[in-house]
Length: 263
Image (cartoon, rainbow, N blue to C red; front, side, top):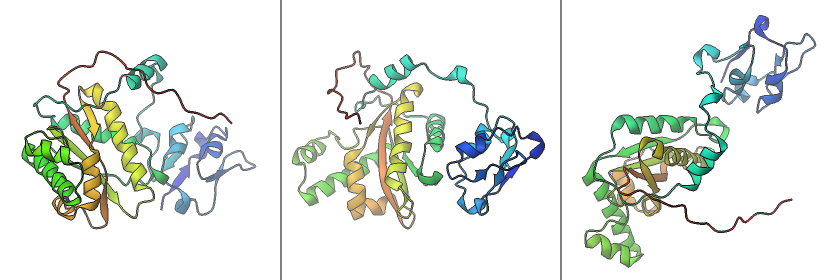
């Protein structure tokens, strides 16, 4: 349950909170100061839209007002051209330098992902970060064991047996996202959080690649599930290899034509 408060003497009576609250928890009042609807505490998802947008700094949520928030400085926003270049030049990195990824960098990326959107602002994502080479190799071995058991992708199994890891790609870091099965949208929430990390990684000198084989096996293969030792009721919903790219890409290849219907 959340607590929303309006400081009347600060309210500019502009009605912005009425228009922007996702669940309509504010309504107009004849005296000009918005009214908080009955039951708002139970309906509020704690997103902070009202605190973030109020120009009069009149709203607090759970006792935290504007003074708890970092200011938005639009001069820091990248240009349209920079955003287009960043995403068009993105590559899935599968060949890494041997150097480890330092913990402060990983903590910054994981902290950034806290601002990823989630269903009803549930923020259900939990993380496991593997940095030990032997541990990451053992996870890849378990995925290969699963492939043997299922008679899947014998060429990848053969490559692993001959020293080439096509599961975790000898990455120095593996980031695993898990959440409760009871979360509203755990697949989407974990995927969006990981996508934030992958998109931000180049700014930290890193590259990433989704660990698809690992993700599938972690949903199905009990020996791997046992090693991960997740909290009761949690499942793996995404994983990302991370590391310093060994090589730099020089060009942006063309992509398939845009597939869209305008209606």
